[in-house]
Length: 280
Image 1 (cartoon, rainbow, N blue to C red):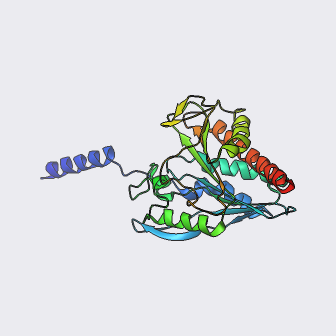
Image 2 (cartoon, one colour):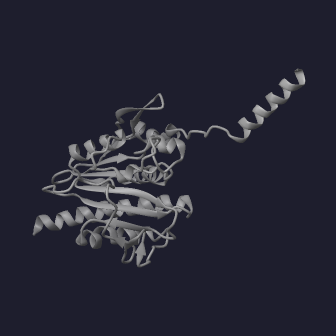
Image 3 (cartoon, helix red, strand yellow):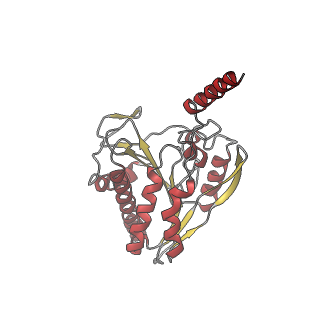
């Protein structure tokens, strides 16, 4: 009997060892540097929002607000969203690098109020999966009457803050270079093009004629998938919308630096465009 029980216990141990429960990646660790900056910054405020349940755990969505020095006109509100796919934390790390750059040169954000959402899919990040824990690709759920709590919370943010611009950060494991999606031909030329050009200091640009199933020109795509994180249709004053995609297989350091350079360029170029528009 003793021998039988020992054998059974050993078998159970083998089964447990070969089929371990997946380890959850801690959200707090990914946000630690941003939190540290917020604790010491005159410009960055940590303001998590919303509550939802998953597998007996309570979650909120991380949000940080960066208030740049006052400008001469209306405040420019831009929402920057990352890690809507849980296995793409590169964007969250890039926001930390971006904020660190702003802390050294706050004038880059002059006249801006930046709403930063580094982890839009916390359960997917914890599980290291593209989808949320409910099994849904959240970036196909927006403005589709979705019941996913993360989507509903983010939709409310987009409605409430009436952003002048929406920027999404993604990493593509099928691309060899950086590229982007954009709404509006003028903005593709005057915002995304210089952003990609600056990012090319760190990563090559994807110049294929077809990327992710869409026609592309010099790494710029003017179509997108249904249900992605963007503003609702038929707004009287629609924001500019840009999605930046880095090649996920590239060096993490280079992806982070490319994102940061692109984001800084978008701030500068958009402020310049607004100054021109006011003088017309």
